[in-house]
Length: 398
Image (tube, rainbow, N blue to C red; front, side):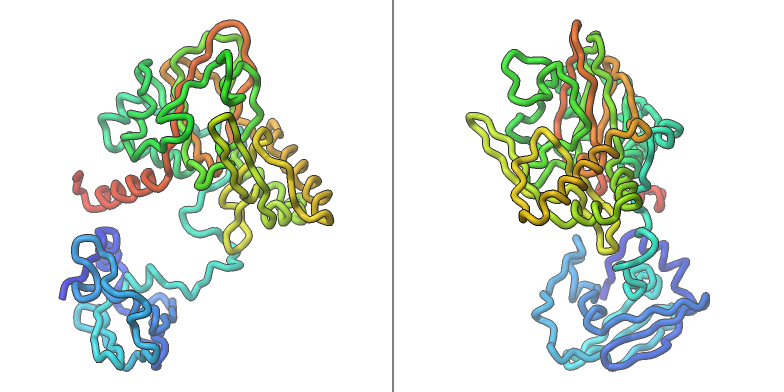
């Protein structure tokens, strides 16, 4: 029987599995103890559901070959033993099967520590930033390096994962380049605006973005379900008077609201409100919370677009308090301490996580300001980063 694990998990197995002991084994659970004193409990049904090897998982893609409904309702863990190599073998009845487990894999996937109500955010969670904090570390990555050097590409993608915003300079000033940038990590998300769209003043604009007016900070397309998770904007021309760009970390703004006015934060995190965008050929509608939270009540996403919020239809007894919370959140988002300001030059490109970082611009007059934009999705970017991390750990560039 073969067991499929990632390179990361094999590395963990070599370093973290030695010395594990069986502290308890009952019919419904297994408790393991490690040399450093850590103890973790695993339910029998969870262990059986995680069974690996060619009898339970497809060898090429690690997907299960069974459904949870196929497991016996009276499942029991009847035996657990530690093998000479430090791994474990567990026996389940009434199926009468034995399943091998890697001890380090079990420790890495322990769930009894719990997440709901946890004081600390999960490992790898983004850290909120103010304009000063991000400005002190932000890097304008070089297009040529990012497209030729995997390490430079990894650094740029990691900027996006960590901060929700990242920058490139030296991008060729050619129409359509913004879509080619997306191909470095994923796929363009096509919408009613097209595969890509021009952000410049137009005679008959389909959106306020296609005017010279200033735009307050906002997330794009809250009226769409699902909402695009990444937006990229590439500057092709910039000789207009004004038009500076700005970005605000919505997670940091939400954190500040929670700290200053927890009752307002709770309202925005509880109630979904309507957003709408319509033209002669389009009518997009969706409901969403201005602040989305995790199990512990921490902010994990925001949706804010004053131009596209539809008439609120909350209960009458909630509406006044909701408007108070909505206004207070808006005031925080406009705090100069949070706004990172920058002027795009031809060849510059920036990307924002559209469920986290709000963007906006100052108004512009004489001259031309021409950006091209497109949408993409964060899942492909995170997938690319994980694959690259495995390659870095193994030393295999493939």
